Image 1: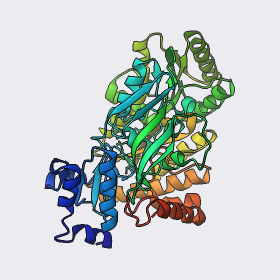
Image 2 (image 1 turned 135 degrees about the horizontal axis):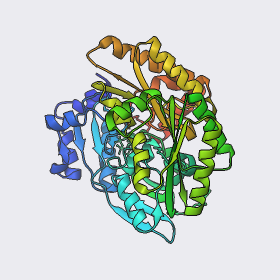
Image 3 (image 1 turned 90 degrees about the horizontal axis):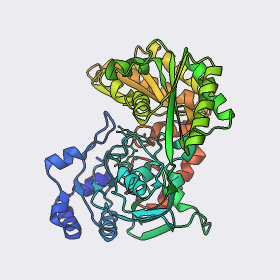
Length: 468
Ligand SMILES: Cc1cc2nc3c(=O)[nH]c(=O)nc-3n(C[C@H](O)[C@H](O)[C@H](O)COP(=O)(O)OP(=O)(O)OC[C@H]3O[C@@H](n4cnc5c(N)ncnc54)[C@H](O)[C@@H]3O)c2cc1C
């Protein structure tokens, strides 16, 4: 047991009573049900028991909780909805799980400044809907948007289907209010698009995975909403053709809002699951989309369809109505659930490569699957090289679990060798910490640890993760 955990559990430490004084007794949980619930997140096979779970309602309460935890050297794991896929909220060192979902006020949606100000527990979909009601757009749209919180999105720097055209969460973070591990409240950035007074600490907090500070208020950039959107799909004999079509689309001067792909395994599983008439003989499926005004959408979709045909697409279809568009997008949305129903355990990863190397990477993933006798389907964001190789297996088969871990180690190594990364959007968490040195080298990791120490001198925030 670590010294931190020993301290947290010391008999007579009165920890829970002290926390109840801060947030109220209804908002501190030590019962077995709560400890079990908050021992895991959406990451399969990762688990750690917390000592208590605390639900603060204000920045001041967060600051007081952190002050107490810091004095007693108790680990604190900030948590939104726990949908992360990298073990980011698993309390491997015990301590306090600090759940920010009570801090869920959407304080402002301003069309004058094109900003939103909110607490971290607001769900992504709530902001997207509030912005849409005022004809604005909050572009980051992770697949988990109905559940995930904006605090979690910023802490993971989440991506989504619109990343190619609109960027990812960090491109929409203008300012952050955050509480340091030592209890001080700091503000970074603000409502301005242009502000270069000092280091860009908002960007540093973005993707910090709960290891540097607890974010208590976010100021986020909005855009005017596009008038409309359109979607199309193209089948290819194999992935290499689809990858060439991606390059041709981008070289044609179109920046699509969506450019997604499914490999042959995924086409088959989606069709089995959703029965939407996909061509299961095809080697790859590309889904493309654009938004804007209707005239430019029509022109861009025609250009993208032309690029696909020029690269050997066997069939191209442009959706003629919103219902048809939704049918096309259903193929992409169904990729994960359709794979998940094949076996009890789904291991979803997000190795990412430069888009010119996608075909090479997917071929390598298929070779790894054959060699390790694993079922791996790959889908993802073709426009930004973000792949989701997904292994499905029976966890009772210990050999298969072991082979899956070896397979992912090989996949990450190849992604790095191709100039890519171990994670395009899901974060490092616990699960991928061991690959960080291979990607970044020891000097980078040493710098990361010095930054961590400056924010969190006693290492109480999410220990065992980034910066450890
Ligand atoms: C079905 C499914 C689909 C998904 N699709 C996508 C996708 O398309 N794109 C994508 O990028 N991700 C995706 N994810 C992963 C996940 O949903 C995102 O990482 C999401 O942003 C996590 O939000 P959360 O509120 O659940 O955060 P949590 O999982 O609770 O926390 C995530 C991290 O943020 C930290 N944290 C949370 N709140 C704060 C705070 N206020 N201050 C400081 N640190 C904090 C935590 O310590 C942890 O390290 C998906 C997950 C699932 C299950």
